[in-house]
Amino acid sequence: MIIDDLQCSDADGLVHLPGLPSFDPADEAENAVISRLAGNWHRRSTVKRDEPDLDELFDAGRADYPEAIVPFRDHPTWQAMPDALRSRLLSWAWIAYNRHTVLAEQRVANPAFALVMDGEFPGLGGQDMDIALAQAMVDEQYHTLMHINASALTRRKRGNPFPDSALPESHTSRAHRRLRAHAAERWQRSLTTLAFATVSEISINAYLDLLADDHDIQVVNSTTAKLHNRDEYCHASISDEMAKLVYDVLDPVKRRFFLDMLVAGLEAFVATDYSTWEAIFRIEKVTGWEKMLADVRAEKSGSRLVRDYSGLYSLMSDMNVLGEVDFDWGLAVTDK
Image (cartoon, rainbow, N blue to C red; front, side, top):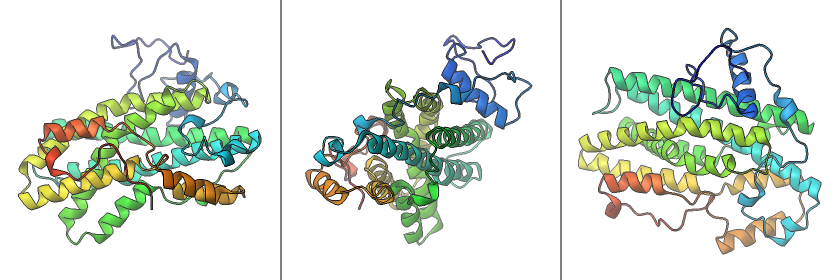
């Protein structure tokens, strides 16, 4: 155990330390991830120094990322690859996932929360909301550190640098940046960021579930997703309420723009990021990857990384705007 003389404060059996993700004190992997976070943030007064070692939990025989959600997993080219190559590509996928998560936290979620605290949006503000958002921003920083730690473990144990710099900016981050760059007015840029953050915070659970519930990948990796997921269920409710409050006080022009940006954010979030896979295949000099990706794109079979849109669907239903948005809830837009 990493907790010394600390009792669980809630009936859920989890330990809730200030700032840190809630965790199960009986779960070795969760203890190890939290200990690493606590150590890096100088919280040794609360956490024992004899922390579980993340490295000891690493199992070289397990994949780093679920092959089941790779969009071309059934393609003959992928199936014909040597096991060592497929394993390395899955490690790259895990590194890319962590990087994309960090970009979402740092470039979308926290900037949106900061805008709310700065009084950017009508209908939002007050002490209680500021406290909730300040806590959420602390959470996001810990999520960032948690995913950076997870990538560092993968690099260390696989003996491969897997550099973030070799990968392109994530599709969602590019879409957000491009839309802000094209916005002529400040209110458009601000609503774009709020919309993308709303989508991310409400929809990320569906992606995290895919990793957290996978019992075949690295235990530390699935545990990282599970710990992150617990916080995001809370953040989703905050973002849901903020979106409703803002929409209620916007004029018709701004309402239309906000709805369009919610749809743009969802399209970006659920799309398979083919540009990242292209970069990975080039780095690893994979033979035949061009045809494999072309085949998958043509079939549309790999167009949707995440297929659960229930969070945003419920939000738009509550806002009574489902009939006002142009989105095919059965088909996500793929990365161009």
